Length: 578
Image 1: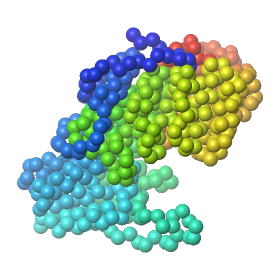
Image 2 (image 1 turned 90 degrees about the horizontal axis):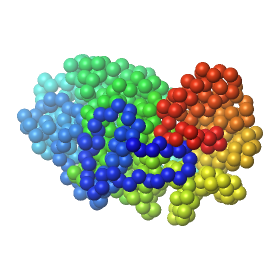
Image 3 (image 1 turned 90 degrees about the vertical axis):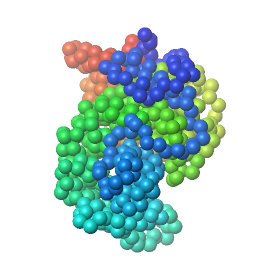
């Protein structure tokens, strides 16, 4: 059995348990029932598998593959292979393999140039998604395919004709944008058709009407729900509510529809009720074990539901699935990022997985994520490729402070790198009892922190940590309050994963606890738990604060829950490190 890990202090990084052998993602997805040792080993195994396979140079060679989820409907072709590629293209689209979905639909068109719906599918795959808009030249290609789909529609095929006409309207020539004011950052920018362009609401309405007229065709409903989500925004959620109704009906009749589950996870998260998707999230990876993004997607629900370790595990599995996909000929090169030589969501999977491990207290897994990044992201290339690297400094600072302090200064001179490295070194020095050294790092952090809200939060946290170490709870309370307010104002509740690695309000609660202001500590801990559910360290503070007020039964219950959730050494938790 693995020894539980302390909240702070050095631990030994686990070696890859697979050795040189490659373990497929399918094998890594064996059901588990919350075994704290087994699930961590599953995640460690997945990361080791990814390293054993490696990403290497991309040699795209798309093939029909199993384990990618559901998608497709009967289209106007007698060519069985064209039908297969059309279905596969929609499955890949739902799985957010955007480039491969285009390639699959293009293959369907090549196999049957007379297939109206194959051309329509290609136009769909070329379009904007929940995460990305399209450029104007891409819009024109998609429009041409949609027009070709209309031309090819068979006499009397009303459904094909309506779908083609809706797609043509979606990609219609946009109205000229108003001239940018002199000095505006928008002046001279290349035109991009945003995912919430003016045509999206009309397209969503048209598609929803078509889907309603063909209630027996679940795929049309899934696509309609996606379109409705595209038309919604944080300020305008009417279409999101409509999408939720559509998806819930699909899932009632077809609970294994992976596209519907994918979009339902997103929709419930956007609607502030992520836990409603929990039963589906727990099953999605098993339904599409080779589709990296679908293996990852449950993390959105898990994190919001406070299942942080589960979020860490599925993202490690998603990383392994990505490397298997590339090794099998999948295309890892999104055209919008020229030198991005890895799958599109690899960094997202990494950031989410590390966030889960840090919140669950699994220091061994957090360090394995950090070690994995050092192998995959060399200090060359553009900032997007290196984006996960600064997050690893937090894991090293908390669980391997000597390793953090031994790191050479980053070759990158971006403010984000400088800020995170100073923050990480400051945290590590405090763990080793070197307050003077931490103050030097605080000075370095001050020089760059004002340029970015994330740096501002890092500065406030390190100020608070230093004050706690020096016993100055008044200064600590002031610093953590500033950090919590900045975090909540700038980043909100629904960044995925959260921009800053933990809820600073729990540190504010801890400062009040150390000061003996128990009622205030209880209130701040409870407030933190409203957004970051089942956070073991916030529960620890809550329990101690309740006991401090004589609420013994409540306090013991809170501590018992914290003990059950925390994947580190519960006896080593200290108020200064929270």
